Image (tube, rainbow, N blue to C red; front, side, top):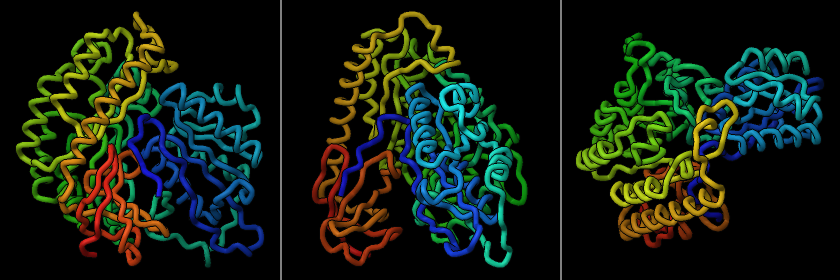
Length: 462
């Protein structure tokens, strides 16, 4: 089994693997579409929605290029390196299939795509579902059969059956200088709370054991709706978390901005309604760096909040992502970040080196940091983060953890504790007595071994 250390890049995620075979592989004329999904979980949800609509119209989904009449590439455009990966994926799809439709964040720059790949059939922007469907209809007309083109209530999913991402809003009202997400995805637009709950109910009814709540700014959920209540559910993150927790599945909160009202979520974690896990994008700790980023400069107050969260819920796990080498970052500012890490003792940490992004205001800032300095600071930061993670996991030796099983093979079972989100955090491995386990099982394990990012344990009960 391979280990899964934390991702060091917040904009990259594994490509979605389409596991569905066409519903009727012998049916003549059934159109077939392939999908390559890049970027964050929010983009993965967009891919699921597109495929769900296509399946409802009679399209089959191909797990490879060769079996597809056309391929949709859902792109990421957060960083220049992510744009390069998207262009590479488009080129691969063109070589392997030839009929390619491009959507996603990079689709907000159609000339950038067509300049590199003029043979793409169409380009649409992020969450432009109707335009993507129009492009597919033009390239591969649908051939629906209402007697066999039945769609499960949960739609098409690109994640394993036992967990699912639950997107609660689009867009963002922040104007961080290094980020162009608001330009690509617009301002905050929250989904009505009753619609989110209904989707979650259908997922749980279909066997989902873990709901991963995502958005660009989860803490701000409902602000644009003035926290209105409709059909018995209020559009506020605290109320939404409580309602989701009542469904009986694990509920994990991602991209939670540290507003003061986040403290109201902590009692829900202490009660067991929501997993004791917060994914918070702190980005840096020095007030001057945060000001240049156009983010609130309250690192000291953040330490106070962290202490309060831990006092109210001692088992809480904190994950965050940081940028090193931001324009103007001095050695003293970077050292402040390292010192802050010593105090904060975050459980899960990712880090990436600053990159210019076309259209970002940070590009025009003075005193850009030399590449070799950024690399050296990144290495020092990750050494610090790794040491903290190693100590945190070593302290779990002998403890009993409740884990969810992600996969089982001949070597053992790959699981996650409540402290681990899929793909970005660590794993817990069971090497013996795992034969009866299945993905989605939630079991108790005694921790017997720890490394920098992963745990190994003994199955106690199923």
